Length: 451
Image (cartoon, rainbow, N blue to C red):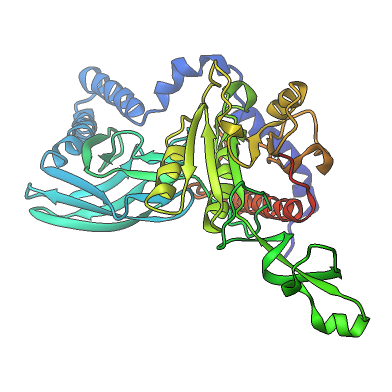
């Protein structure tokens, strides 16, 4: 039987009543009254009232006094007492990881007391941005035993983890007070920036020639056949295409690829004045992710790459642990950025052409100084005035429009509890990476290289 129609007329009024009852009329006074939300406050007030009732009215209230006293004592002392015999150690199963990818973690807990411990959680130090800490909940740790737990940790940012001392916490049985014990971490985890896989690289000439690398858009004497043309005086007879010569009745020369190695300098502009406030979706983090993606793609295709960061030049070579070295340097960059050196450096012009990873402010400043050489990879914050990217003739290879909520209070992609927010954030990241790949591919095939 459907409900009567007059009930539906009451719903707007009930909604307004609920808003009125839950509205915060004095937000400035919250810091003075928030302590009233602690669960021990109503219990303590009930204890005072029951004690007054037992003294002045009836002795039966002493039962309530004893019960509330027992609850307060047990809720305050048991969490501290249960952790006295606990020793915890956390080991990352690998020394390096990538931002946003799960990393195996082993937590070993030794309980030297005969009583078990319930309601343990591991938190603090596993999230760099402000917000709710990820917690691994452990239902029970037995007495006089050693327990080993295998967990998955998804880092929310680059850098070293744990970023603060890790602690095991419990508030069992009533959640009135919490007690914690330190967790030993012998080998911290270094998290690299998120890397977007790229396929193409620009045809950037170098002063030297390399037989291992062939330029797809420059003609030479090696590699695959790229086309034919009429014979010119001075051409070698080895390059004559005899089949086409017989067909055309005149000498035809075959053109092949030239042996060359792409030579690139990736320059990062990390001045805090050029970037939006720090956050997982801020322009500084996406600038570093773009540089890491470009460096990885160029390094994988045997390009000669230099990384230029705040006056420091880091060569990215094929031998040794060079990839680990420059990614470690990017991972350890401050979250607030690095100021530009007072002395202008010419290191960024030392090899090949430049790829400058910056923001619209940095791009405008360089244009004002007359520096137009190279390609620009620009990360624009969501609240920027300009919403459209410039034309490719301005030397911009990639223009990323970052999504809204680019501040430090936004939810993170792999640590939020709301599945809808999790799905939405991942879709935003995937869309940004797809846009990056598409614009980069178009630039590598259609944008001229400027030295």
